[in-house]
Image: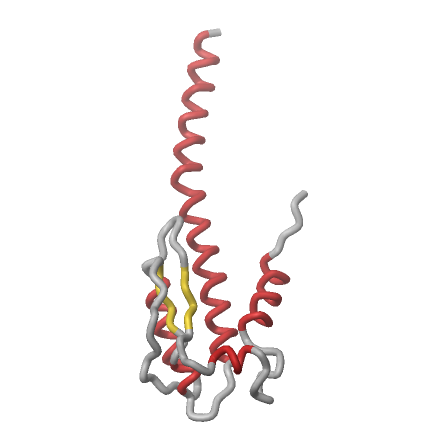
Length: 137
């Protein structure tokens, strides 16, 4: 009988180790995937005149930027690539900030442009909820 418990204890230790290692890694992958999809959608939905609004989306980990950039990115590609690069530093329990500090970004979010009459961020979050929400069984 003691051998049975010994095997069970060993199994439980192995299972605990697996969970401690694997669950955080998988959560970070999912977090990175969601953040990247949010960034991509928000940037590409951002209206374009000069490209400054698209070029000002900043992706940071654990610290929110407080100033606008002097970047112009009409296609949004460079902004998305920069964000992808920064998301590589994402760790378990980290917070991702997708920030745009231009003074007029709220007007764009609230439909000021005919290019994005529903905004960018709220639309993206609604889409992501739909994409990533899994019913609990």
